[in-house]
Length: 354
Length: 111
Image (tube, rainbow over all chains, first blue to last red; front, top):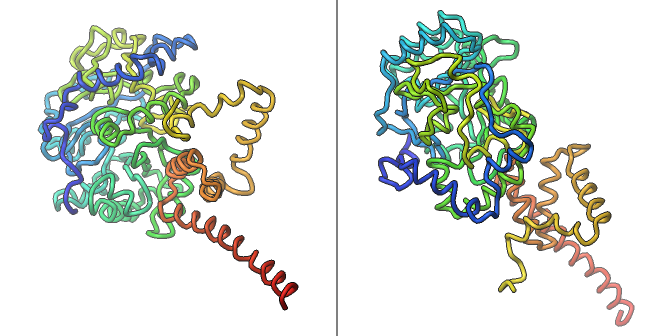
């Protein structure tokens, strides 16, 4: 892989590395002067405030912010310089909790989750618990980044892992622009390897899904139409197959917020999000059935709130304090970034929701 | 008064045209929305046609709108530029084909 796309906000000592600064921006400007309604006011119009957590279905674990890539729009501000890595002790606490919840999906994310030194240990233990759907969000290039990762496809297969991977476009230029030089070619190679052992093939139980998020300051198009275009192009050009495409909206936080401000697209983007607001999407927004666990074991309504350091509104703040009765029915913590999940057909880590 | 005739922020106010002529405005937007739905042509193909026409009409609002629309649909910059060339070719062709009328007239007057 070529040079990294950028540096993390932390490494650049950017103001936006401070989450308070991000929250301040999201509450000021067009939202403070009344040009646009706050998210709270908007969902109140349809009596959907406060948003409340329903039964837990998805446990999403962020095992660390370290990554071999530095993507332009990363909401985690992940990169090789990030040292936040989940310990085995926290992983054990999570394993204990998974056994007691009725969550049908376990969703590992990062950074590059595979870079956590205890990643394989955790996957082996967790896969024995028997969750219905065990997702690893793999950036694909990690599979080709170093010899020690070459066997990851077989490891995934052995543990029946559902692989979900980012792919911003079916062309090299657009993918590399967002994710770094050489990412497209390495991703293609990794996808071909996954296909070769059965991942993503028609009727295969080895699930391979792709995540599309826009490469710039615009919202994702129709998920089904995009999936059709991706499938056609990847099959024709590279003989690659996959199951589903999830279209995810970029939320205006972290490096994407930095990009929006630097490119003078912030206001227009917020207008786009608010204009595309869909109350139907609010019904099924992912924070209502998901719990996000940070690298150090703290609990959040979603991965975005985790990155904004907005903890759950519950007495149980840490995985070691997990109790269903303390978390179910809690009020979801919201701010203006939440418009990202309610625009158009909605957006979640599993794609559209409405 | 704004300093220029075109303000990009005015595009957001497009729906306001309905306020002074409600029935016609609503009928227009209903028609507009229907036209761009998936049909015998895909919504993606329609978006590219709209982009080309936006250029031949030299409508800055439409150019902004359908450039963004194209990006949202995964249209590449190469596809966008080719679409504009189609518009440009028709524009220049339409100019040049009138040359036949000029030829006819010359031949009639001075042939």
